Image (cartoon, rainbow, N blue to C red):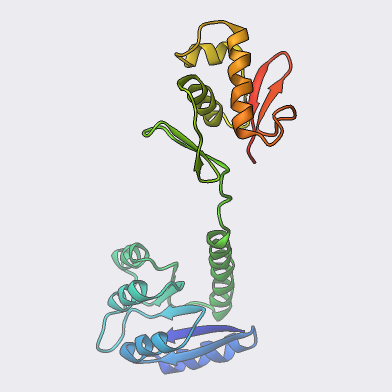
Length: 225
């Protein structure tokens, strides 16, 4: 069940919304006093906040600001205030939607579910860890690490391997290597020798390279994922 915290001083409207939303699996807990609502948020988990702007003792925009400081929760502003400045201010503070009164409760139900789908999708994306790369290039230190271990490379080996890492997944021609690596002339034999030395340092089986691959007739390609 979706748990919604409603901050609303119109108790008749609060009752109507709570009764209507319950049939759509949305449980509403209403607070007329914003301080009590903020306290409740500190001790209980809610999925969404529905917030009026005209409240006793504290302006709704201030309540919105306090919620955003302490909690990561979507907020729908539900207000009779039609001033565009209020709408802009609420959205800039972090509110997810602004629903001007009067409105049909069906619209609120749809907006709640739409926002929660988007919000939960974003949380899921945040929780997917980035795949850690096997090779990491540090250009400033002129270092390349494999699984956290610094590789011992000559200048020429470093130039080629760093170029290949920057073009990860793309074919790099021999001419491209000669143009971008100062340690080489256009001697293909010396290039072949250095490529083999690099493979001996990074591959489990240099004769069947997993990372630094030859693309026949085109050049080389580095693949680490």
